[in-house]
Amino acid sequence: MARRAAFLDSVWEEKVPVLMVDAGDMFGRRNKNERFQTRFLSEVCGSFGMDAIGLGEMDLNYGIGFLREMVEKYELPFTNANVRDQVTGELILPEYLIVEKNDIKFGIISVLDPIRKIVTMSNKDPEFEIQDPIAVLRELVPRVREEADIILLLGHLGDKKHETAVKEVKGIGICVNGHTHRNLTTERIIDDTAMLTATYEGRYIGRADLFVDDKDGQLMAFDVSVKSLDQSQPDSEEVLQLVEDYKKRLKEFQLVKRSDFPRNLGSDKEQFLVDRSCMGCHEEAWQVYAKSGHKRAFVTLRNKGQNFEPECLSCHTTGYMHKNGYSDQRPFNHLVNVQCEACHGYGSEHNRDGKWVTRAKDSCVICHDKENSPNFDYATYWEKIKH
Ligand code: HEC
Ligand code: HEC
Ligand code: HEC
Ligand code: HEC
Image (cartoon, rainbow, N blue to C red):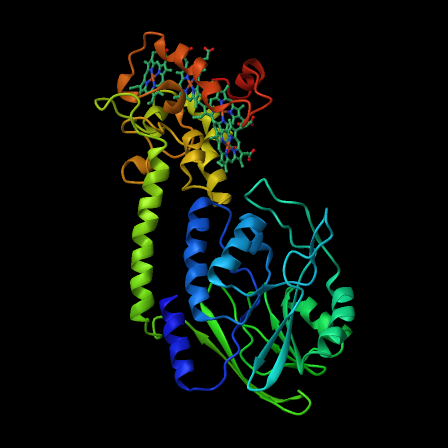
């Protein structure tokens, strides 16, 4: 963000009119940490003064309520022409935007690929319907053209489909491609449309110098370049400070979240010895465990990007909320997955008096509750991990 800000500053200093757009997927993945980060990202992007942002499916990760909150609070100019609330049939964002720069009116339209799945983290969302982008553009482009000199499409469609779109729908002057992992570093024209792409994860920023006929809005020529926001790009001190402040707030946020899961069960004197320590003496039990889902429970979270969420970690790690139990700090970060000691207890207590067996039998329902394991039945489940 700090590099982007410095790059933008250098462009502003040239004192040429700038139209700043993004083709979507600005928001993060579906977990609370990234939602927290997305607030910050929205704030900084808001301060850049973007002119238009197309909708990507990621931008609905935290629900329509969150998106609208960001749009209002930070004046993020999101637009989309083909995603509707299935119940009301209404578009969820402004259908298109008209932005005037240097006396030229840009009609900005964005469409999302219907094969993208919209999954939100909130349970208050309506179902969304994604209409056929080509059909929508066929109807909309001529309509917007009446108000605008040139049409700019923020396509959230993926490489091939952008080409199809501009071939099938006449009158699109510029197409900025989203949802792609390829930068377009040279001038590329399909039919009469200039294709522009700079991707991804905020690592690049594309620049196109446009020469537009101010009488008929015809794009006469353009130059493109893609700037890598790597170490060679200096930081903006101002935004760097914001990033530092944000990191502090993130730490606090994580601590507050974690404080709902205090690490106060068990005893300071006992230790979890980690699964491998049992392997040598309990070979058979190890073999069963190694093949079980319990041994992969943390990977499951990581695959979902949820491995920092205390509310998930409580059941997908060993000794969560216990003294000396799992935490993301060494050495407790070795207690990932549902290890032997998640069921049997602190290894340092190993004393062969039968207590461990009873405790382990009682342990299942702490994690296999109604919500997370509705089909749980001790006999059938035990059968699968019997040792
Ligand atoms: C600390 C929490 C926790 C405890 C205690 C626990 N489980 Fe699990 N169990 C899980 C999680 C999490 C998964 C899902 C793992 C995955 O696939 O990511 C799971 C999955 C399973 C599965 C399906 C995975 C497979 O290997 O087929 C079985 C069977 C199972 N548990 C049985 C049991 C039984 C029986 C007990 C008690 C003796 C028990 N579990 C205790 C958290 C727990
Ligand atoms: C109260 C304990 C508990 C909590 C909290 C919990 N899980 Fe689980 N999770 C389980 C158990 C138990 C299973 C296995 C269910 C079964 O097979 O019956 C499971 C299974 C899963 C699976 C399916 C694994 C597979 O591949 O079959 C996923 C994915 C998962 N959990 C993700 C999460 C995420 C993400 C969170 C946090 C939002 C979370 N869990 C919170 C106990 C929990
Ligand atoms: C999901 C919970 C769970 C996990 C994980 C688990 N166990 Fe167990 N284990 C149990 C339960 C429950 C019993 C008792 C079964 C019975 O006797 O009904 C048991 C029994 C045992 C016994 C046999 C006790 C006897 O009857 O002599 C040993 C030894 C043992 N576990 C070792 C291990 C080791 C070593 C690991 C890790 C490699 C492990 N367990 C992982 C739940 C678990
Ligand atoms: C140095 C060898 C050794 C190590 C290491 C070891 N055990 Fe044991 N464990 C034994 C012996 C021996 C017994 C008693 C004989 C039996 O029941 O198998 C036993 C018994 C058990 C029992 C049944 C206890 C009861 O209450 O009757 C469980 C459960 C168990 N071990 C789990 C574990 C777990 C979990 C670990 C790793 C943290 C572990 N053991 C590490 C040797 C070991």
